[in-house]
Image (tube, rainbow, N blue to C red; front, side, top):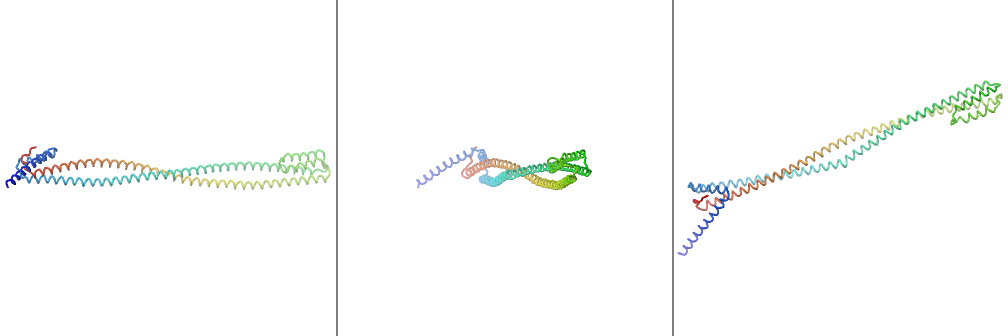
Length: 357
């Protein structure tokens, strides 16, 4: 029995010594931080004032509860901020992606559709302008050629009219010949020469007048049969000249009709070329306006992309700073909570009347 009592005393003494050492360690740990020192001061003051221990325990427990609530609120608020951050990051990244797609698609449309279309329309306008210029050159050339042809016609008709008048003179002279003198014969022959001079060598009448001159040069004009042959020949010549004048006049009239029809055709072509130019100009204007619109849209989306990228960078930097603040605050709350729990354990576990800070 004595042995059992002795052992019990030894155990109690050993436990007391262990508790004393633990209490000293807790006190030393609390003294390492300002918050722990403040709690030790609170415990010391409460001990010196002789207040009820339970009040101190209640005060520290309330402090522990406040710290736990603040820690929970901190976690809750940071989780909300994290959710907001993640949602904003996803939204900004999507905005950036959409802006990049818009810029690329718009540039692709400009490079592969609108720019080539504008060049094609401009080439068409330039080509039709060239056709239109050639058309006017042909128009002016046709007028010049027609004027030259008409002048040639008038000259040829005048030539043939002069020849007809000369033939009439020759016929009148022959009609007056009954017993012609040498002078009258010379005069008639000169009249034929005059007709020859008025008939160009290229005229189809030239061979006939040469034949008449040859005939008149070798005939006896006192012979009425000879005179009749010459008169008949002159009349045939005159009729041939008149026929040629009529043919030339008819051909001139047809040439005028053909010329006016050709000018009208050129005018029709010119008007059609102008319609093509007008339509192409409208297309070119619309294409340029579309290019301006898409270029403005592309530049705006590029600016949007730059803005979204800046906003994303700012958000990431801000969230990183807030994360550091959260981490530091959480660590501080955790440390204070641990210190408070140590202080509460200290108050609950032993007599602390001899605590000194």
